[in-house]
Length: 283
Ligand code: ZN
Image (tube, rainbow, N blue to C red; front, side, top):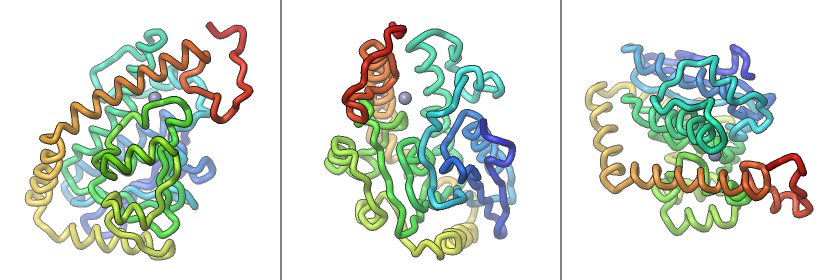
């Protein structure tokens, strides 16, 4: 479980809010409580008329290691929170339950955060792995430190990318395929050349550079910022982004179901552990 300080909410400059993942001891891995706390923080920033720009940062050497695979009772932990979506069914069985959970806290949250009307900036250092990408990609801008590394290694685990499948828009279709097929990380400089991040700065200048960018944007009229963001987001959506993401989400669910049937697990363990033997009590 994330504790109550797992998300910090700061006001580091006029008209700027900074939301900070504060689970460095767990490399900012995301469990259910942390994701809902993060969602609450985004809502707080959205609803505060004094806030015009939102930074998403994290403490420690790494931005986020992705989903917290050590979380136990993940389904029961959903009960502590009011759902933001209307899909329901987290207490259903098998694929129905997984679809519901991932629709709510992964795809649902990502689309919700992308739709936040105010400009958002991800501030990324160190490793940003799999589910970590789903915190960065919904943001409008990305400032990365020179040591930042981005990786979706889900094909290694027999899955179709992370649940928020915007890779073709983030890095182009051909690079997205290579990245997913090989599960090799993308460094900050290459991410910059791909247009996946906006700026790369030395690690020690990351917070300052991100805040300076946020403060510059915060000088602009709020309505023009909101409507400009809306215009660019809709340009992506007019290219079929929404339908493509929903399609990939369904394919992702298919891989989970396949892996459950074959291995008794939602992921394929055989790349990491070629000697894997399916437990006799599974299925
Ligand atoms: Zn999944």
